Length: 281
Image (cartoon, rainbow, N blue to C red; front, side, top):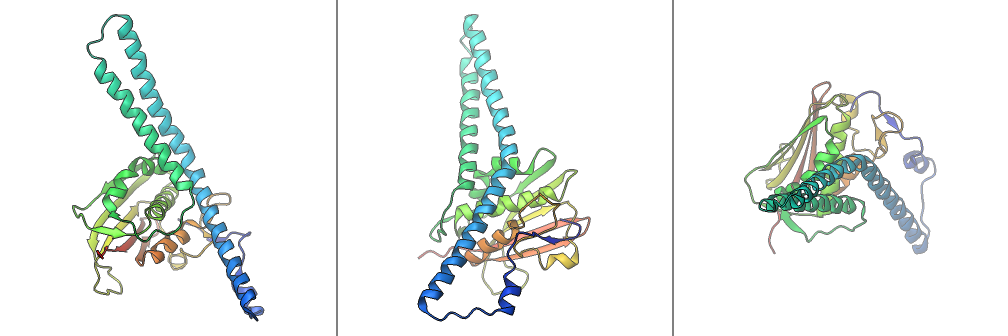
């Protein structure tokens, strides 16, 4: 993320309007109507961000699916050739290649469909962060693209967290896409997990942390405090919605977690999410 920032022109600017014409709700009906309007706007933001994720992932997923289909086709072609030649003793290995490629392609398509689905906050889900990363690793590699070296560095901890796994998945994909876009010439994205306490505002609680670090352009000091504002983007016109990091922050707030951003221009960015450890009962 580099260069002059901008606010998307189509974004509603509520601050100025409300300061000039303060909203006074006279009745319960007006209050409920205003609440419904705000919720409708929030759903529009979520929908726009999901569509952006789908658009960003589509080409990468198509490329990866094509590779898996090619593996299946090659295995089936060899099987046909060997059966025609009467050599059937080593077909098991070719069948295994085809089955593994098919299962991988199915899993990738399933993950892509999950990104686009609408879901509510599921606070009851308890799971290990490492398991979530492993299950979506293929999708993350698609999001990162071929020019990026994506590295997963996971701690040995089996500590569980409690949050919505779909929103977590979308948040991680958003972070990877942002890091990728900050490295137009390629680079390294590292995703690390750990069990720790936030370095700022320590409340004595333990968290499971997810850190996404890239070797990209970095974020200038005048922008870093604003990166979570909706519709703010440092990307060129036509690239991005300005909603990705805002949705990441929304997820972290819902999960009662914390988020930190550290960046140095021309050296890269580190975004660390702290999610509370699940307490049984």
